[in-house]
Length: 137
Image (cartoon, rainbow, N blue to C red; front, side, top):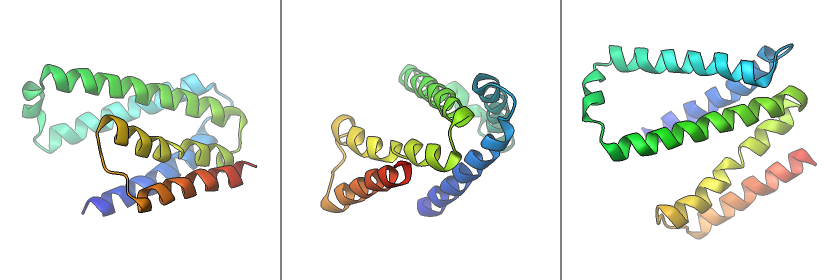
């Protein structure tokens, strides 16, 4: 099932890029990020509320909070820089560079999470990097 969720994530990420490029016209990337973040915040809490998962909030550990806060800060910075890039760049060039995050994840997960890196993963990562380079040049 996780593969379907990942595919849907990719589809909505693509829609995010297109819709953001249209929505950013005439405003700063920071304003666009603030509006988008507000919508994401509201949507996430509505889902938690209506799925009956509010009780999990009291089960959060200090470790959960620290790493989720750090992840949130990384997300915020990612979005701010993404919208700054969209302000002046073509979405067809910005999005592939943004997707280099996949290659970064492969490398970082190896060092920090001790995930295995087989030949297939290395080749896939190199293809992603190569594809981004081709699209940008």
